[in-house]
Every structure is written in C-alpha cells, then in structure tokens.
Length: 44
Image (tube, rainbow, N blue to C red; front, side, top):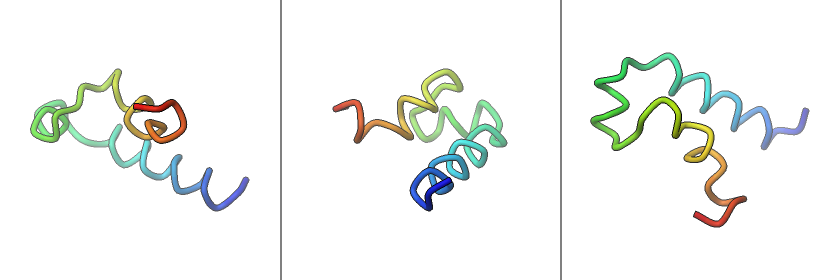
C-alpha cells in the first residue's frame, strides 16, 4: 500500500472513530466520510 493510500485510510479510521456530534461539528455525516477523504480524486 502506498503512503498516500495509508494516509487516506488513517484519515478514514480517525473520522470513523469520532462520534456523530464531532463529525457534525466538522460539517460531516458518517456516510460522507469516504467522499470527504477522496474529494480531490472525485472533483468535489
């Protein structure tokens, strides 16, 4: 696994470990985590 892939997986794991209130405070929902982490690759 490349360093970039590991970094993205670490970010996903960190966000998934947060509570829903913490995610909401960051403007995220749990189902939006992958889209948020990969936003640069999918043009968001």
